[in-house]
Length: 390
Ligand SMILES: Cc1ncc(COP(=O)(O)O)c(C=O)c1O
Image (cartoon, rainbow, N blue to C red; front, side):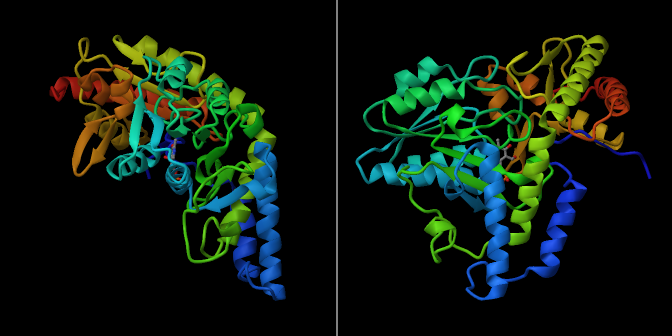
């Protein structure tokens, strides 16, 4: 079989073998319902609470402020809708989000707009960052919540969250941050960042898919997300997934122990890769902030005024070469659209579509990035020759 190279760690990561081991152990033996009062239930409950303690410790929170969810999307939905609905109860009907948030924030915001909320979409600069002054100017007495991501999943730029959460706090407004992409890459501490609510997804840092968490600071007004049971302190009804929680906790433990080592290794590889690509291609633009960024994401666009190329043909070509990456476009109802993030950053539509996002991880090697750079060269030559530039 052809050698396959995975450079899409922002989409998901392979579970660490120790994570799999931790989950299998629980799947196999502790099947009780964590809400049952008998010994089987108590055994499952102990594992669940130990897992919660581990996740809470990682983000500097108290255990009773961490609630398991089905992943990042649910945590984001819970945050945005739950804070907005709680705000509405005290006459606040305005929400502030940025134009480059993940769809898991943007779409609930859109639903709220349809339900009568006033949604303010903050623009970003050319690096994809939100200006704290804009946040200050957007606030009114009607603002129920502000939701701004810590780091962007497409380009990697990091926002000044501590500054912006302080602005929210001064005005008594709840502040949520989607920290899904940043977890395990940079230190995330709810107190240092000044967060009221935060979203986590385990599969972004070598944990299992289908589990995440929402952190809710004590005293935050937020409506529950799921009804029909008293699990997760009445915030998220439904029988808890204990094996996945155990895997999540193991992944958090490993991320905490390895983050410095992983950071440096991945950063060095990304720098090498950018240097290689800059040497090979003229008209190559790097997306995102040059230094205020996550270590693992390298998003590059081919400038349409220099080399008009079809980004999707590049992604497919790379896949045929065995290299798995993501493009700068998303499939929405069957048609490929340029990324809302790149457009908000000011890239033109054709350039935005001619984008490749490489994302590196714990298992990435220098041989892999060299192979990927060589493959990109072959593919770009083929795409350019075939005249599929659009
Ligand atoms: C920034 C960000 N938010 C939310 C999500 C959604 O997380 P999940 O896949 O766990 O639903 C992702 C994953 O793509 C993400 O990158």
